[in-house]
Figure 1 (spheres, rainbow, N blue to C red):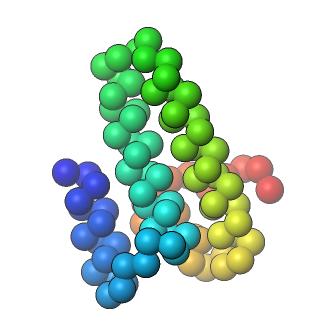
Figure 2: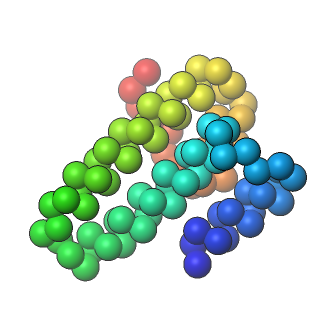
Figure 3: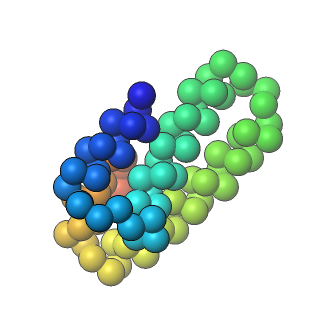
Length: 90
C-alpha cells in the first residue's frame, strides 16, 4: 500500500527510524492525509473526517514551516521525496 511504500523508501535512506524527527512526523501526516482524502472521495458528507483532515493539514503545514526555517536543504529533499507542494506562506 502507499503507506508501506513510503515507510520502506524512507527507512532505507535512514537506518534509524526516529519517530520524533520532523521528517518522520511529516511522513506520517502525509500518509494520514492521503488516506483521509481517498476516504472523503467516497463519503463526501463525512464532516468529522473533513475537520480531521483540516487539522492534520494545519499540523503538517506548521511542521514544514518550522523545518524550512531550520534546514532548507533537507526540507527541499523531503518535499520532493513526498511529492507535495511547497508552502506559499512564509
